[in-house]
Image (cartoon, rainbow, N blue to C red; front, side):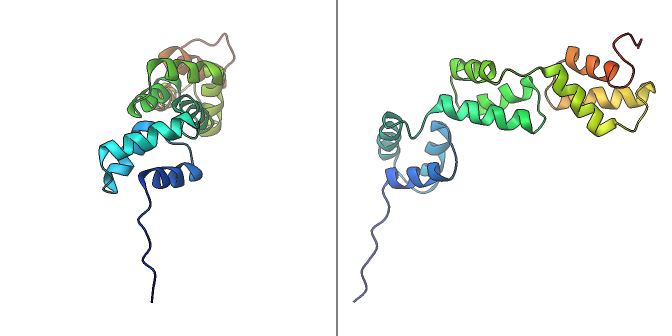
Length: 158
């Protein structure tokens, strides 16, 4: 006679997700709800995981921020994405502080990789490069500095 398998608990399901990668509390709650877990059971499981430090929003924020920096995203976009995960302002601020990135240098690197063989003295090319950086979440100062410095040096005129 075959044994019936017991359904995994909310705690077991959440833990299985955390084994694969970091998740925010909000994200785990949403995924548990999608699996039919009652909110009260999900909250109990998430509280237990948090007390055991298996789920930690501050750690999640730092991991996600580092991942996005290495993928070439700027601070504005990273902050916005962190905000979608229901993280506190303190967790977001701490994650952004911990990553200690020179945003202008990151923008210069992106421009040189994407537009390295193009002439940035051409206004249309420079505009495309600047727009690219702005869409990636860099501020105007970093975007303009990167397109100005990338192949003309610091004293180039716009």
